[in-house]
Image 1 (spheres, rainbow, N blue to C red):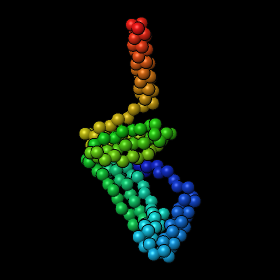
Image 2 (spheres, one colour; image 1 turned 45 degrees about the vertical axis):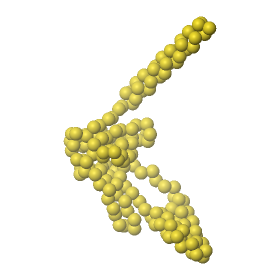
Image 3 (cartoon, rainbow, N blue to C red; image 1 turned 135 degrees about the vertical axis):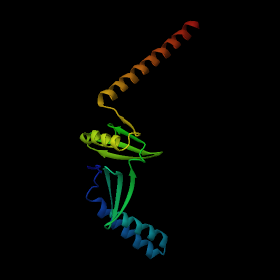
Image 4 (cartoon, one colour; image 1 turned 180 degrees about the vertical axis):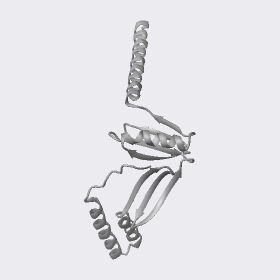
Length: 168
């Protein structure tokens, strides 16, 4: 099973605009004799052709980078993954999975229907992974609890103020 993450697509005008501007600035910097800036602009030109893809599979999690057909992988096997946290708020209506290895975290955005598949797969491949998958009802309950606690603190502060006024 292969699950591909959802990447936010660039607007159609972004790459051509960046390419034209970077080439123009590189040319202008060469005319001025500032070759350091020109080299930087060449890197920006290359970045216009850069793509990445998030892949979750039975082997592990992978971010695949490609530039002119050359592919590079940043791969974690399931044995290396320590934590998976499903964040339903940040990427709504989709779900952002924060997949962690030690202190490093990678965000993967997937469809809500794929979250349970990913968590089940991760649990099968490495039962030691800590998984947090709170549903919408649980999140609402936490928000309500936090609101009740705020109200209680406000009431306590008000009572303290009233007591101080009575003492004066």
